Image 1 (cartoon, helix red, strand yellow):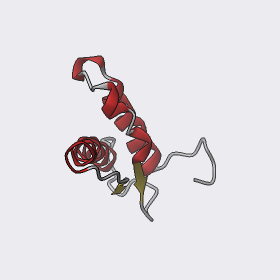
Image 2 (cartoon, rainbow, N blue to C red):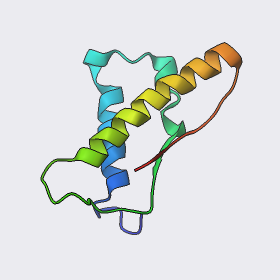
Image 3 (cartoon, rainbow, N blue to C red):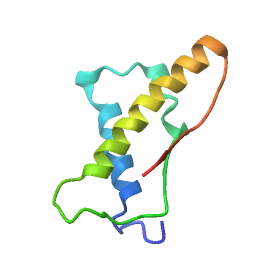
Length: 89
């Protein structure tokens, strides 16, 4: 990201993802929260492509990252495989 204050799909997806992880109602275990830095939101398109006020791509990417976080934790626990999660927004 060129400007830290500029809106990007990736930045907003990460913000939504972090809100999910930090939501006390979802009760994400601390050992899974430790893997949060391994989730990355990437992509060539940085600006919304639907001319609507809904954050469709951002919300979907955040949920995929959330699922990927848990999949990564399961992989680490069961098989000892540590890996990054990359979500192409």
